[in-house]
Amino acid sequence: MSCTVPLLSAASHRLTVARSKLIFESSAIAAYIARVAGNTSFVGTSAFDEAEVNQWCAFTASSVVPHMYPVAYHVFGMKEDKVAHDNGVKALKEACKTLNGRLGDRAWIVGDRLTLADITTFNALLLPFTFSLDAGFRKAMPNVAAWFPEFVTLFDSQAGKNFDTDCNQWSFKQVHDYSQDSKRTIPAGPNQVYKN
Image (cartoon, rainbow, N blue to C red; front, top):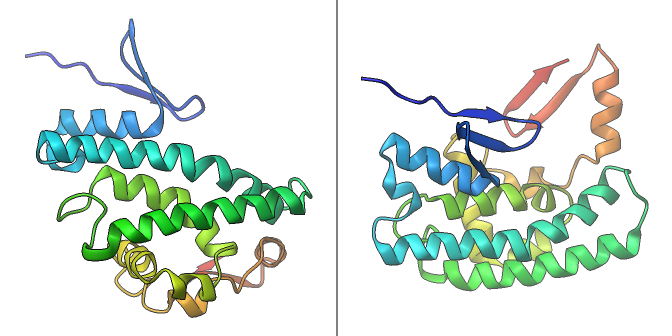
């Protein structure tokens, strides 16, 4: 029995399945890996669920990701453009309103379990939720505000508990300054401290 082991190039975000086959874009790669591993529920348990997962991944790629970049560039000091930052935040808030409506009566974006739609959307919103979408906005979006830390607690049961109070406390400059001082520790999140 032989098997082809896919190769993933982190630099190019491409998955080479065979010499002549190439998959690119992170959600397509993740869906492929889930299917190959036999975890089809990750991409939807029915044809309709699969279409919804694809729909929400596309929504995130078109309505969240492009607006996340100007926010990131401004927050991290890579490009001083307050207008682009503010426009990005405004667009992200609109996308969150759509997501908030979707999450109105459910714990996850598609179906009754974690799917690629949740992972894709969470990753795209991580930076804006941390630095730009303040507690006042999250209070106005209760469904997204409940979903976001719930996702965080999948990986660290304590991390999501104080998300509202811990979020927005560290600017990139503060994190950078702390990381340059070897005698200090960098708070990585609630109940976590990484030694430099």
